[in-house]
Image (cartoon, rainbow over the protein chains, first blue to last red):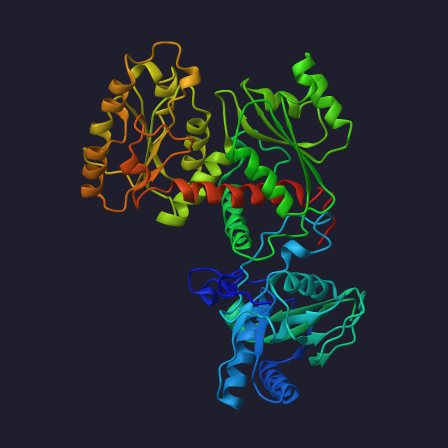
Length: 210
Length: 319
């Protein structure tokens, strides 16, 4: 179905990426933790995912990359930059906030929704690549799929994550995984990205009595 | 976040800003083709309007529906209130149906506070007598913030019937919470007693002279015209409507002088407007008028308020 106003869908009038890419630092890194991805590992892994996305899609046509706030947005921008290096075309990039679609709103303290920005071309008929930092229960992705359905009808939806730590609670899998990381529930996976957290990229695993 | 929203003073600066920030996200939803969020699925909201309303009631109803809550409207005329049932009995009947929120407008100041003590549901004040109207103040602040940016140090002038205005009371609280300076202007007969005592705080002033306030020294960033409430005007507060307009209306000549001093000055009016009385058509329809932005913001702000009050049930398992 045509969506003439899809440019305005969920968009903001100002530069959306500026609003989305504000640093929002997380908790301090656990000093007793163990680094599983170093800065250079993260760079290497993202480069591979960028190649995989393009290879799988047979080019960069019709791709739309949407990051899930907050660190997914940063990863989405990096992937788009890397795809531009490979293919020479800049793929539309945006952010998809899922706060209002979560299934645990009732049992959690109220969270402030973060901005959603959909590229001007919309997502109808496009191949949407969702990007998040850590894939865990799969519930975030479930919410993201619901949020996408309200914005349009992509031709396909793919999922790229930096880390897959297992423990899925829903039948959801990632198409592109930076690193499979077997973890226990007691452990925490901490992802830090330079633009977002103001410290060098790192993925650290902490807690769980290791 | 608080469980009830009875007064603008229930919200500190952080909470007020959280509601306004979320309202910006909600505003985006209004531009979508599918205006529906699953956020409040399974919640029941009753809009209980003992007084007439167009925009507040419809925006609360639409806000609830867009967030997938079940919203039901009750008014005094169509309910058992018209058969003589007391407020308490009516409200307790509704409460027995296990609703999640009651949005109440009532002609008695303090009615919402009273109800909040009786029921299990969240109570949202949609205007109680001449006391407060917190969601109106939030939407005014949202509208102003969208136009002016942060309100710290901004000068807002509120003009009109202050004695009978709940909008003014909530607005002063919210604007001061956000750091704006407020000057309120009214004829002596419509200046409530005790307001002078508020002036003790920095950045709050009262005046009987509109021209003096608008043009002397401190040009306002925004002027909010309040409605002359004809239904409450039986007390001989001013000789004629004409005289009120001359002294306190946003006439064409006042508008021109205001814009000469500050071309970006914003004009607000909570509606419904008495064109030609407190606001001229020139002012209401000028590019500086934010009246329709206020209506549009009302929906987003009320969605945000419902979200912050209702989304979490307060059990708050450790994240």
